[in-house]
Image 1 (cartoon, rainbow, N blue to C red):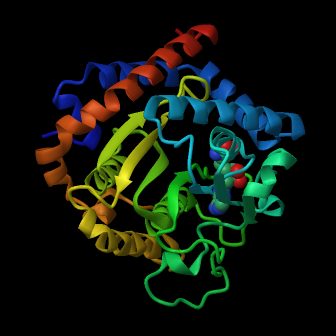
Image 2: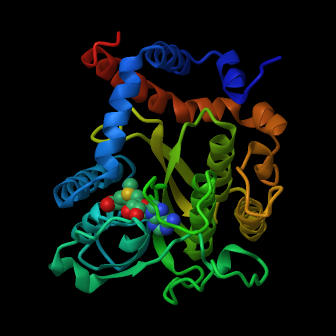
Length: 337
Ligand SMILES: C[S@@+](CC[C@H](N)C(=O)[O-])C[C@H]1O[C@@H](n2cnc3c(N)ncnc32)[C@H](O)[C@@H]1O
């Protein structure tokens, strides 16, 4: 019997993932890797204005890559978009440049809570509204009213079913300043963004979702969820940024019009239960990590294995491949391999 979900995938025969896992195992044994990661983390956590501007420009290129691959930004006609975790603003800048009629709303962590500053050029700002807030703290993340000092209303412009495109690129920051910080904030951030996106995207709209590690069961269930709700789903790993990491983008088209599009509300409610658990559940009532079983309302792991494994491997193959190639090159450069 396979022990983990990754083993389940490997048992189907997936040389790309096998290669990646072997490379990671080799790299982790070398202490040079630890030192390299410590250096990288230090630089990221102490980003100055110049580095922020570099991230801004590189994010613009990443969105261009995603768009070239998935054709997700309509270049003409009105386009309303919501960009969650939008700063420094490269994705937004690309969308506004690509479509002169696009109008957007962005939500990003306040700078005094450790969030990034916005680098968007002044000329783009008249078609974009920026709202600084922690997206994990909005009332609408819960299906019932919860009176807790950490919760507040979301931006009034974030109305249900209004946006043609919702981008989810919020990334948990080690530098976040928050009275309620917990190690599982990374799960809360992802779940919160998916709830808000599914609430706010119009039927037939698009979503661009940053995910990590398709070989993890939680990620696999989120991919499945997007797949059944949407008419079309593709995955893409940009080649200009974070190639050595496990991150990638899932691009869903025709959200709400998929085979199980009618289940949208039910799925949002399941996600809201997962948000509640990760925020106020656990032994001490201050949340806990999410695990695969929190997403059994989408599909059980057994059914995922029985019905979706082939499709998952098809969606994961290029991502594992690109990461493995990048790691191989990087390890060699560090003198690790
Ligand atoms: C990878 S950056 C996004 C880059 C962006 N897509 C761009 O094009 O410039 C991740 C962003 O998520 C934001 N973020 C992290 N935690 C957040 C939270 N809880 N609420 C809102 N934004 C958050 C960070 O401040 C950061 O700006």
